[in-house]
Image (cartoon, rainbow, N blue to C red; front, side, top):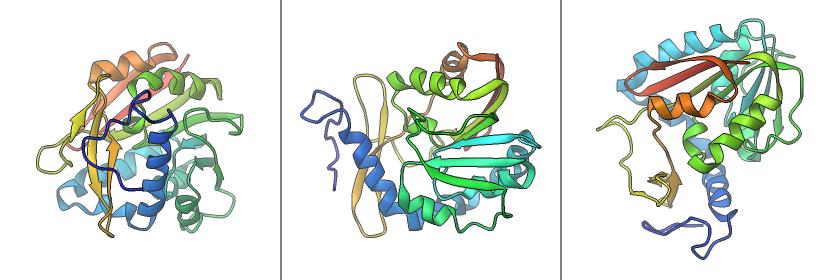
Length: 234
């Protein structure tokens, strides 16, 4: 499905509430084979190298629930230090790629699940990770996501959220902002198809306020191209 610039994708504008999510799912299905090219940008290599060391350290010896794992790029790094990773995504195409990652037997399990409802995810995890998912959740749905995630983790679990900071000249420009304050980008696939994709860039205050209801403590590590929010559940 191609999406034209400027099309209003908010519920009540001629689409059902599921339509934007379906478009996003279609976009990532078609983008699966080229998704990891986002890690090739030369200006981001130093920060990515730091994150590839920092993130696995957070999960040393822990059982990790990874939300919206995509092609398993971060799963393979987390699995080096974690006891086990349970990685979910709603999209079969990216899960197929994720299952081919060079991960030691028994260290990771991939399965299909919705990243907001988290229905069907296993219990007993004492940590969680979400990479580049937060920015694709509408602002009005973040509280539900945070609540659902906290309910599926053990008390005192450690959670790390990784996503993009907006960097002029490196980030895709914002194409529009909707009435709720959500921002969007126009993405072009290798086959030329263009999709409007929800992509929010939250402030530090927005992030800390979003996790305040469930977190005992939280700290934000801000880089030029990325941010990493680490918090511990009450």
